[in-house]
Length: 201
Ligand code: MN
Image 1: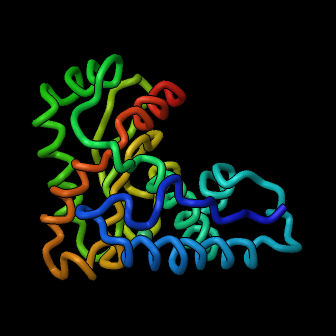
Image 2: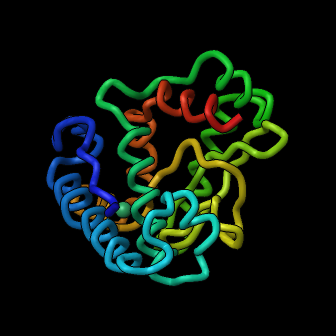
């Protein structure tokens, strides 16, 4: 069965003013759609057809088409869901406890995550990941790599990610990636991140 481009869980303009509607239209309707169709083309008629997206990126990232397009498919599926027009603020409950235990404070987490996103050279992602021992770590990956890939230089189960490809922010922020990163906190859907945390533990 072919992978399908998921609908956005909100309208294109719902994240404004933090992320503009035109960026969302192109990002979802062109970029994510492109990863999806190229992923399907790469697996069609091969032994890889029928594997889950997690299995593909965990076990077949040595295949460049799977790495780039499977990574792109998975990463954006997560990205749309960890944002919400009613997002922002701070996490609560077990996730807040884990952030405090791993980073000291929420602000210390923010500083580390922002720095990982800002210093990723070229295109890539910054992540908040759950490690095997249950602690949280921040890291970043290049291109459409993902911490689930064994050689991404970053490990764990990703529960929050920010896309720092220029296609994610250039129309509204041009070269000001740090401003985009700052705005991202206004739309983070902490309920969804907490759900991902619960599932990853
Ligand atoms: Mn993207």
